[in-house]
Length: 218
Image (cartoon, rainbow, N blue to C red; front, side, top):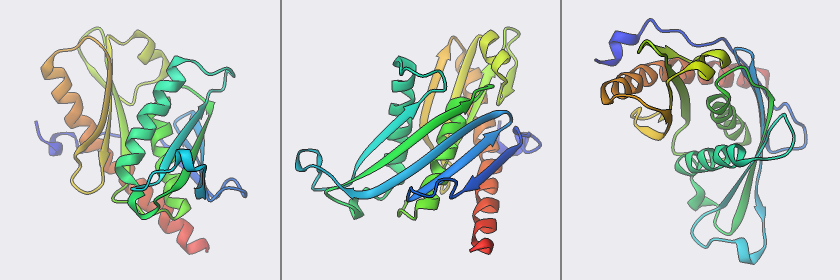
């Protein structure tokens, strides 16, 4: 299957506000459906010599769950977002400095990690940091009948046989990050990948609308 086969797909409604926090270098609050995430970016900043890298900026990602105490799932989210951001940020322009990304879960009704990745990307854009490309995350669930559901709800995720999440870059739509759970066939994975790749265009279009609106305001 090719991307054109999926051009009529729709994602959950997306709403975003940039500069949500006044004391950060960049911030965004993003709602994808009823799932809401707040992200802020601070840096590049001076950091301890022991933490400095001579080649690039040191990126730290902190994820804070709505429930309170951090757990293994939160550390996983931090790892995924950090690895994704490191592919996008031109860290070589900021050697021996630190960049901190803080993400706060506000509401989770399905698609929390994809919403967090997209919100982080918008906060990075708002911060003015130089980037190789922007990224878009899209999720997909495989139900018990073998059907793929794009951007599933919380209940659909709980009953799904498998979930698949993909992050694409804005230049070539190449896969930047992928993470899956459950059991699925190679064919189901390939179809989910192409569905999400096609749907990423809608996320990138949304980014353009947000940035264009922000530019008019300032």
